[in-house]
Length: 186
Image (cartoon, rainbow, N blue to C red; front, side):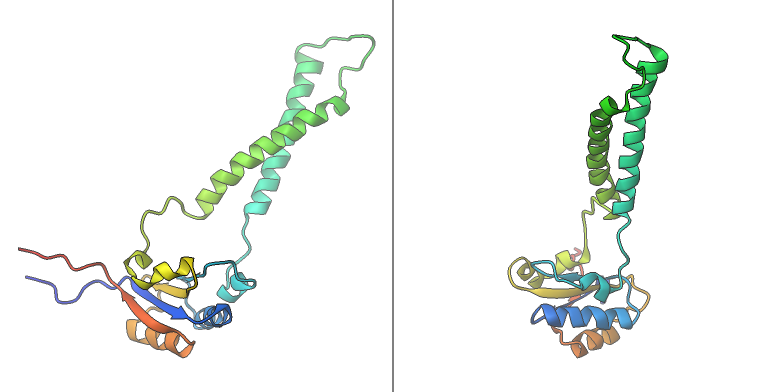
């Protein structure tokens, strides 16, 4: 038997300009949608607030990694110079924190750079090999001059008819249903 209805993965709607996209994001947020994305060819100031997204924890994570790297570098130098292999040369002190600063700073920078790459991938759920907007024909405009909102069907508030009406009332046009291509069975 052939299934007459295909699975709906979401909706995508096109908007005229950045201001209309910002307004649409606020409308979606106020309606209670959580699994929606705004697509634009450039960053739009205020978009994160309009979408209701919280501040990224990346800055705090990197600060903690840098602090831990600095402490680890200083501890390593103190251990090797003052405890493990103490050498008194020309009456210089065993613990010379001024000389430790460049190594501590270098380790902090090295660990911060690696942690940034790692945690960016983790927080952005990468690699992601599939997104429902890949089924849209019009979404390619987003790299040039298009402004789009996509809503996934996994959202608790998603209803194909109701969500389409909401997107159109927010100023969206060319609302497209995202469905996988039909497979022919023999």
